[in-house]
Length: 501
Image (cartoon, rainbow, N blue to C red):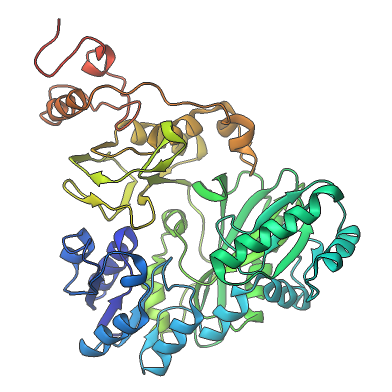
């Protein structure tokens, strides 16, 4: 096992990796921007060093600075987490060339899977089902228009280097195609510096199901079952769960085998995720995420496997001592991503200082976070600030527990998406398992948050609650709405911190 590992990330994932390192007796080295000088991951690590700067380009994306600190500190391995440099093949190669270990796949595997066109070509050759479409080299508009006739309508225009919904267009008729191609190309060139496009059949009501894989350096690859990540807003996942409500044992096994085959086809090592689209019993390869996934925690909860520790063990040369046949899924787990954003203002990012943070505490309730009371949420970074994970005996139990946990999650000083998450979990369609990619547009398009109580009322009620005089409260905006009939939250129209009427 390594003696010294540098974590090239920030926030909740940096905290998660640091804890795994420390549990294994590995010296953890954190890096930080000027904004994050007092962040929880910096204070938790065994050692921390400044990158300087405020923006990602000046700090967490600066390869030269990161490698400089790694060399100065005697780092043996670098864990990239997710985001930032985690899927940057050039960074992984630079780490390898510097004589250190990149805790992830080989740089050539990242490069192969970084191009969606190349990835789909590799999968087709390996016998992994892919969505019918055109993934060729012809890129002129008239050539793509001709290819679209073979694909059929409706179809998707997608950027080969895309992600997060950028460079993506739904096209229902031929009349819309040229504008969609030109718009997607402009957006892709701006976001990724690459305007290469491909076409594929548009699935009207699919589910997004991914398979977790682990591969060691001794020729062994396994999978740890599926996660369903269909609840998405603007192509960003916000609620994930496992196991999926629609997979039969037969389909689950077939998708797991296909994921292993996909990983082996690119010589994959370490932890990764093979993503599929599922519709009407059929599944198709979507892409491979060559890194740890945000939602890895729910797999850990139902399997008991610590994926981050296995990343460290595999990278240090250990053989996998687990296999799919002996690992079992137990119970049901759900994850909600907590974003600092304002649901009342079209989910624009929210920044500021967290004046009070009070978390739900219960059996099999987990909070992966890089925030605490007093933390500053900066506008420079991704607005996801934490993940709330619960596990139950079955899906109904997990849903009830998550609703309770969201009701008892207090974050004062910033806006969050907690009211939106709670509305999703309580929706009858979610409870019934109708959790396709169209869920938000189908059931939540007209959702609006309720009016928020005054800030002074929020703070006073939360302080009063924390003294144990009333049961945990919840908000309609920055905190959540509890069930206590005597809670001041029930009468906030007349209640003030200086006394009621």
